[in-house]
Length: 294
Length: 334
Image 1 (tube, rainbow over the protein chains, first blue to last red):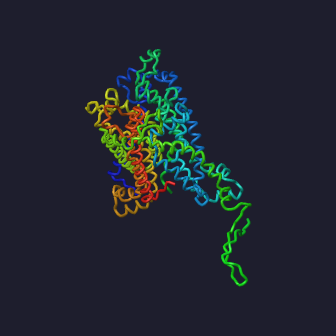
Image 2: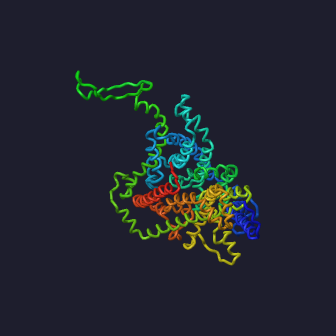
Image 3: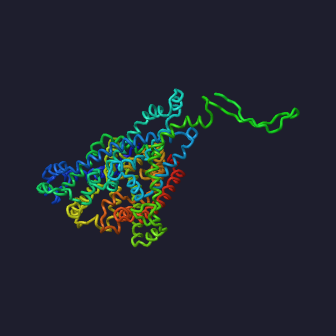
């Protein structure tokens, strides 16, 4: 780097640093604001006195959230779908990407199969036909409706198959010489080698399932089956207050619907916020893996 | 391995005087007692087997719904099902063209989508270039970590936060505007502001992703190019335009072409959570319209017709974008 210590340059560096600092703060600020509201008293929040720090600190909003069986039930539904959905997706992804990564000379229908999968990301039947398909399969109001339709993430399969393609051919050849069939080769060689890629796609899948709310709204007719984000959608966006029981009315003195909503938002965001700093390395690596070609 | 001839066919009649003999032979190669197709099958069957679950799911949840497209040409009645509902040809599409707000809906969709694509290109590139000017690695990494965070929150959560922040009565944003003497604006309720709020909040959520990609591309530019440019008398600004941007061109072109397919995706998850009837005029996009017509008003045939139109146009754009990405940036999807 050529050093340039002119005044103009130093002003630029200082200004740049400040600007970028503000931008990164801007990304953090809304979450801090919601956190502050959730720990503030209802009166202070309603009066608009809260900015980035709680005013009249109280945990009433959180007591309310954890006391709501509907909230906890929705939380549990989300956990179930994350676990089942991710496990299914990962298994299917590995088993689908491996054959598709083979050369057409080794696997003669490979191009045909690849097109079958790729076509589904180019063109889709649309919302209504998909909904009716799920309905006719009897999956409405079941966990399967949240898990099965998106069980094959074709995009991730493509990512993984490119990764497998870039592994040296000698690996497969030597394993074949040693007498291993395709299953053994996949399980003993390809999977261990692709663990970082699998970890990254796994993380993205987990986040995707956790944040997914529309399918819950579409496929579930009963609110007991709503995953967390769908439940929040009804409470926060639609302002559906049917779930607040009469006994909880005295709590409303200490908390307003604003702090209650803020607490619910924060609890739903909390798992991601906690996990993110530790795993952000994977998330960031994952983008580069998928986009920048060597 | 056993090589043998089978099926000899004599092409000329045998006679003591006919030499040489012309015959057609079939060459067979047998390995382990199997030949040709059997051998290939024995080698390949695990691969076909592995694809079965994937194919089954994709068939069920992607291809079977495609057959449901026929509903676009029917007056679909749920009780009568696909085969019992009357066939009405292009009437649904006629209804679509005659629908009073349809022009507005398409305009909103493309207006918001194009703005998002443009901003989604411009903002991350600028930030990546600015970020690259910083010296210390840990600052760059912290910044990337922080700006990537909003991407992981769902639009349900972000909408809740946004509704709170932009509230005209108690929202912090209007409070801050109040310091500058600006009267409270009902951002989410005003047709003038709504599209821009959508674009701005979407950029806020997603620019981290682009920044990371462009920064990675930036760091791979050969430093000696900068030195050469400096020696030719280029200041930092000129260096940016003549070294940095051209160096990033491949990835920029790639990201742009991959995003062309999104020209009709104005962001259902975001808009659905933030819009309301007063702002339908500027907020209603194709997907929200399909949702209201199809799921809420149960006009299945009509909604499918709209969805089909969108799918076809999207298909054309996405295919175009993949072809372009291949031609311009040598990007192959599989």
